[in-house]
Image (cartoon, rainbow, N blue to C red; front, side, top):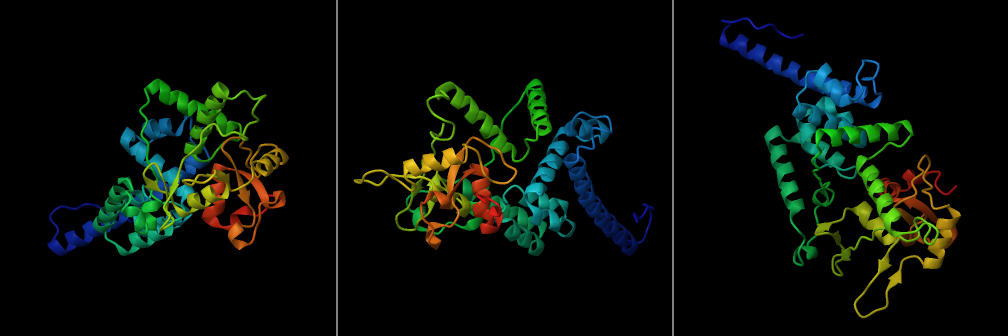
Amino acid sequence: MLTEYVPGQPAAQADTALKHALRTEAEARKCAVLWFADILARRLYRPLGYSSMQQYARRGLGFSETRTGDFMRLARRLDELPAVRAALPEIGYTKAREIISVASTKTEQEWVDAARTSSRRELIAKVKRVKARAKQPVDVGDMFEPVEPLIAEVPVRVSVEFTPEQHARWEALLEKLARQGVTGDRAEILLDALAGKVEKSTTPAETAPRGVVPPVQIHVHQCPDCGNIEAGGRTLGRADAERVQCDAAVSKPGQRNTTTIAPRVRRLVLARDRHRCQAPGCCHTRFLEVHHLTARSKGGGNEADNLVTLCAACHRLWHERGDSAGVGIGA
């Protein structure tokens, strides 16, 4: 229970009261984030008379735009990072806010452990160092050094400025997609929309079935010595590196270009799967990739029975979580 402020107390009593108030404040922040996430996830702002979570936060809770953004980011990231969500009552709001900016499903447990064993100041310094290192392009010299997992997995943040009208359109479109059952990672939703626009303007549907010829090709480079794979000056994390090696065209100096899966077999698999992601509950038809149910490193081959069509997001999830993520795929 919160201790009421009473002026004129002795030093020891004032110190005890202040520390109790700070503990109460920290506990209240944890609960506030969890309640905020619950209202967002279940869209409880609508029965309360608000059309969006932003409107509820600004008008119903009196949040500033900055605080609204902080709570929205933290609430959404908690859904993507279950280990951080589970540890929130222990590590607190402030530390959780720091680590969600750099954690991925691959590294979240390591960041939670760092939050448990570090002071707030030490954790902020570590996050800052990792962010700074992740922004540095990987040069030839660095490619010979093993890349720290925490650095390889740091998400790339892209900032987009909207006018108020554009932001309203953005939220309305996401709301409409949610009513149609399209939810998930907002980055994937945005990429899917951009891919559709590219396909519409460059690839006639009658001459190139969706997914056979990707609207965008990503060029990556693999160091012949250490094996690290990088794209755009950033080293890929383990899951994305494995995805690339599943389904790729390979170019080596002085040699003929090859593919990890024969084009004829790839077309057969895409046609068999009707150019649609085969992960349970997913129906994406863009950014399709062909995945090996049994990895080639474990004896799997390029036969059609060992291949399945997955979208980029589901393919990444498979490699992040291992075989357990693919239960039911291809059955």
